[in-house]
Image (cartoon, rainbow, N blue to C red):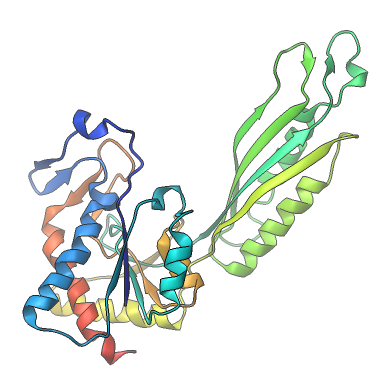
Length: 306
């Protein structure tokens, strides 16, 4: 069994000093409490509870504490993939949704950078000698945004545009940063191909384009194994006295990696929380013990479905 939690947050150094951990009634507040210090600790305490109970009905538990998930696990991904090859199941301990849902599927994410290179010229004296990279990038931006709605659930967002130097210079370079998300592998590949086609079709003559990036996280699709895990979690939760549902989400996590490796995966097993990445991030302290119990119960019951 593979468990994964991440130790990094999105916050800048010094944030904890400015906004330290605090408890306000039934909520804990602070940078990273939901994403994902609460889930990280859930894994430790669930295994400790099983050890204290004398449960040994598993071959091994490998717990990855990932230090670079918030930037896409560029250093940890290969290590996680190698461990996934030896695992029967994977539990990713991101926080539960605000309504308590666990996560059984996630969109895949591709990030592209398209660098358009034209030709600089004096915009007043000899503009005809220039080739506007911004104009070409504008055409590509319109075409890229038009991909939204072509496939169910697929989103394409040109999030950053950066080009030009001065108003009196025909811009020679413009860079587009693009976020692409899809719930399914087939439609993610189709969108990726469409983006490459747009990148390589030019409206302005004598333009050059360089494309970098691409696949970052493949989709976490809810297959047979994931469905079994979600059903088992619902059953365990009912015995613990609370309702539970599984849901899809547009954000990516290390669950995308393990799922893409063919390992039945369940995510969102940490405490209930919300406002992730923001100044009011919180977890519900009343959900901590039930979520630890849920994870321990899942581990103890895996032999009934796998």
